[in-house]
Amino acid sequence: MILTYHKTSSDIVLCLSGYLNNVKKANKNIYMKKNSIKSITSVRLNVILFISLLCFDLFAQEVNQTTQAHLREAEVALESYNYKKVAAAYENAANSSGDVNITKQAAWLADSYHFNVQALSLAERWVEIDASSDSALLFLINRQIDTNLIIAAKENLKKLLARNEGQADEVFLAVFPFLTTKDQEKLNKLINYFVKIYHKSSYVKYAYATSLMQSGDYDKALSYANSAVALDSSWEKPKLLVARILLLSGKNSEAIDYVARYIGDQINPSSESRLELALLYMSSERLEDALGQVSQILLEKNDQSAAIRLMAIINFRLDDYDAAWIDFNELLENKSYPMDALYYMARINEIKGNTIKAIQLYSQVNSGANAIYSQRRVSNLMVALDKRDAARVHLKRFGQKHPKFTQEMLIAEADLLQGLGKNSEALILYRDLIHSYPNEYKFSFRYAEILLSEGRNSEALKEYAILAKRFPGNATILNAYGYLLTDYSKDYKKAIKLIKKALKIEPDNPAIMDSYGWALFRLGKYDQALKELKDAYNVYKDPEIAAHIVEVLWEKKQIEEARNFYLNAKESFPDSSYLIKLNNKFFDSGES
Image (cartoon, rainbow, N blue to C red):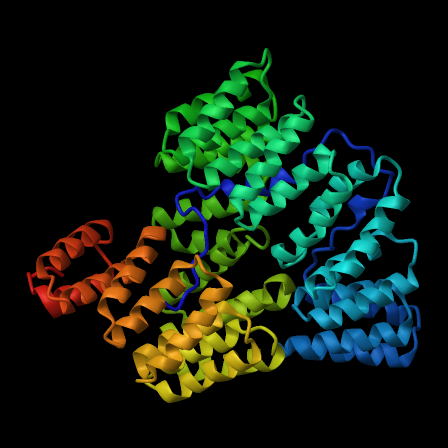
């Protein structure tokens, strides 16, 4: 199996991400000095408008001609979607001007475009120009985490904690929501250092548990959340975090019981605990129970916006679209959760067949967890209306205006081109991305996938060979290359060598276990192959693994067992292409 397995729960309701984001935001009314940490968040601007206004403002101030020229260059590059040149021109403008605002925005652009090394360099310059700025120092910390400079990030975070008033562990919890690195595992390494320093702090252990949860390490996250509870039993947030971790690890009933008992022990349960219980009920499809908790919050007139949001989502889940629309519209009018409101209102219009209105609403979802999906829906709906060129232009323009999503919009554009049968144009787009981001293997992966879809197997294998040399410690790449060698060449020994190397890095990854079993099958080692494949299936029920098990059983002449396993898998995955192919190959029972 090519794709690496990720230990996530697929049955969690869509609204969960909003609550996970809020995990970080609540604390014990920690004191923060005025205009300090909360000023750190990046300015979210329409980048076209921002560059134009900045150019106008700076020209009015008669900044040096070199800086003006670089900013004009950035404008031109942006119009031609040359993001690497935009970032480079902005960096040159920052270096030529010495202006803190230009430097800050240059750093923000480089980071948004995922040019990590450039963003780090500009962050260092920003701190140099504005040494007293908490914003600059925290931005530098995040960029140091991105580039794996954990020791440097640690020292700067200690400096940031020391310069703010209050107990250091309290300040740490206030800073935690602004640690916005792209790599959660690296962030975990950093936080672990502070856990060792403040080993008796519920604040730090709560932050660490949250970070571990977000990286999918639920067992360890649960341990630290419980530790935070033990250190301060009066603090509610770690208790709600325990429930959330239980939920994400698939222990829905245990999570519900935990929060329900907690609420039952309170004289006046908080709205946060009731919202958490409502969310847990929703995850178990107990929508009426969830609605009861939300109604109680509304009766008590606490946290009205959050309660209305959740009620709207519940009504949406109950297919009561009119009631959901009223609730979401109220949120939009009150400017509460506007992105969620727009997203669900767009979905309601799409469900009702109001395609043009759905497109208008989806187009406005420009931040949050649903932004990427929404813009892809705009593109797909435009294609359905036979507006193919407009669909592509929309993705390009959205990525141009919102640098945070530029990469994802380029990927969406390439997917669109593939869907329209324009593989050659998609390959060109990925080639440009590979050139711009040589240290990100995902673009080479997608490039190779298109080559495979066109039957250009030898070219695809060459791409994977290059990747394996460049990223020898990446289990995903080693596994994918080994799996493809198994399917598209007869070099099974090399395939097994690569897959074994991947298994050493991620021994419990069922995708890699599946690849190993499949390679053994190709070598004719059926008994060993069957054991590996069944182990993989026990870890992760997947139709591709199931199909491999059936093939091995068939070759071992265990026909009845193969048929039974196939039928059970077919019941779980009725639309799986892997199982449909098996039916046509072996069973020919007339199923489709």
